[in-house]
Image (cartoon, chains in turn yellow, brown):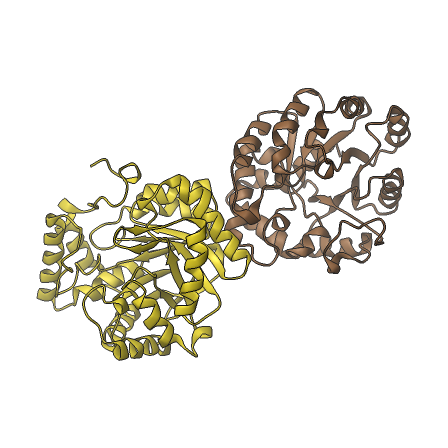
Amino acid sequence: MEYATQGRTGLRVSKLGFGASPLGNEFGETDAAEGERAVHCAIDLGINYFDVAPYYGRTLAETRLGAALAGRRDKVILATKCGRFDINGFDFSAARIHLSIDESLQRLRTDYLDVFLAHDIEFVSETQIVEEAIPAMRSLQRGGKARFIGITGLQLGMLRRVAEAVPVDAILSYCRYNLLITDMDDLLTPFVQRQGIGLINASPLHMGLLTTSGPPPWHPAPAEVKEAGRRIVQLCALRGVPASDLALQFCLQHPYVATTLAGMSTVEQVRQNVAAASRSAGTTLIDELRHLISPVANRSWPTGRQENQDHAS
Amino acid sequence: MPLKLDSHQHFWKYSDAEYGWIDDAALRRDFLPEDLHKELRAAGIDGSITVQARQTIAETEWLLSLAGKYPFLKGVVGWVPLTSPTVEGEIEKFAVNPKLRAVRHVVQDEKDDRYILREDFNAGVALLDKHGLAYDILIFDRHLPYAIQFVDRHPKQRFIVDHIAKPRIRDGVVMPWRDNLREMAQRPNVWCKISGVATEADHKHWTEAQLRFYIDTAIEAFGPKRIMFGSDWPVCLSATTYKNWTDLMHRATEKLSASERAAIFGGTAAEAYRI
């Protein structure tokens, strides 16, 4: 496993990170015991970065990850989130954030987080994130409950504006840098690199879209993007390369992102992802795929409040 | 090669009576030129500007006597009773010593947030320029609007804002500090010290990106040619080490040009304090 330093946090993180949202059944029913074995296998194979959220499985993912990490907490860098608790359940008030971290710590069976992120910030006002949520998270950091704090979201402009308005240690961006889309590098990467902010990239498979089984029913991508995903999967199959391997390798080549989060819930997925991460992708096939989907490249979708969107829609 | 300077450090012979404000047990001991000299040599810094910690005439006399003895002490920011009708006599007495480069009053600890606008205080400050002395502004972020009005009353006076005006880093608060600092930076007769930053964050749990945000804001506001590096040693030891702080400042300025870095690490201080 390769490791890299996550911005100025100084955290040495495995380039492949464990995304724990599948442990909360976000991408279909998963087996709790198998999920636990997957976590143990990941640690044994050198993965040290684990990302979860109270939102995933409405606390189920945290509960399962916490159980799996019992006795292994000191081997991992653990990140969870706050502010999003349900599909339409958001609360970034200082009081809820203080409560949320205690609940998360209890489920995760630990007394501190390495990284604590405000989850999907575009669903509330920028002012509340800057003036209430981040100061509340800093006060928790001061108390030693979280070593580093940051923000997550789909809307890159808002992530950047918040980080320009108030200091953050890390930013998690998802579905904005993978085989189907790379506008993270236009809108966010140069800024975070200049500031030394840790950058975490998630959803190398575009939330399940680059898999043979296809995206979950709730997937918000426009139809033409889903179609492009199918074509990538088909072409990769023709060339005898699993699309998911290639998609992961593409993300792992990013020069500044220290850790790329891939969702995993089985030992088989862990082994496959770790094996894929140990090889580098053939650039010719990547170029071919990027060309194939170029008509729909860089198409995202609206999330959250109108005023927080990257593109007027 | 311009000198590499630490624009802000203190000395003391610790006593409870005189240094009651020091709440960190690790700082309740003597910090003297020999101690600093080791840190400077290890960090590759040629000299420093030593700044008053006690508000007494004796403090100014003591720092000047140290500066006479130790050539690496390039200048002294002393204290004189600026609100006293007899302050000019004190200034004249001290100003013959070329090592006295500025004076400072601990405005941040005054009960009256508008202390810096007091008539008697301003009458004292109005005497400094003709004696070739700068004035160090030691305030918290909440005092910035008053400090701007104060500066506007003395357009020819050289001012140095200490510790980037002490934003509330530990509370994650940026505004209105940032707007006010940028407004202050509009005045060409004001310089700014990047010092005392780690101690405004949580001493145990600060992060580099957190400090960098405030450092970058100050550099952007004033430009590298009006920014000076300072350690605030030994006060900084509550939150960092001399080496960690200088290393962090080197990283924070690594993207700047060589002449800009030279300014921050000495040139600016030499210009602002006329060293």
